[in-house]
Length: 119
Image (cartoon, rainbow, N blue to C red; front, side, top):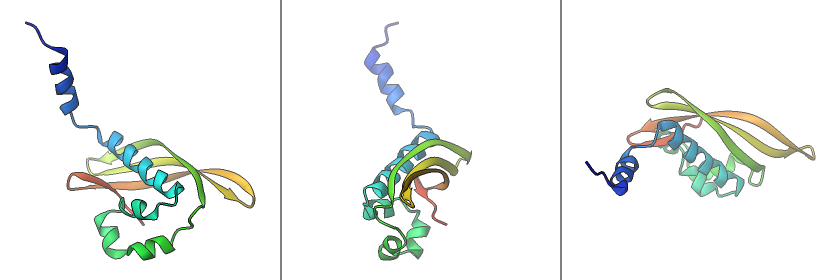
């Protein structure tokens, strides 16, 4: 039996990504937007429930643009099929010194997409 490499790769490409991988990518993209002060893009990662209770203007007002200098999502742990915690190291200036601190945020699946749950 001959199986083509393209056929095998096609099957591998069809396999959905693990929730941990998807959440890590989305969480990093949200942090990348925040570091760039792209508040509109960051707002788009909020869960539908968070967006229903927080206007884009209120969200923007709650953030300090330019505060974050870098952010790296280091790992994701999923407690269930619909809830994951993303762990990140964020870097910012505090009292004239560059500071790094760990952060944990919750992501939930609604429908077929993962969203940041703002508390």
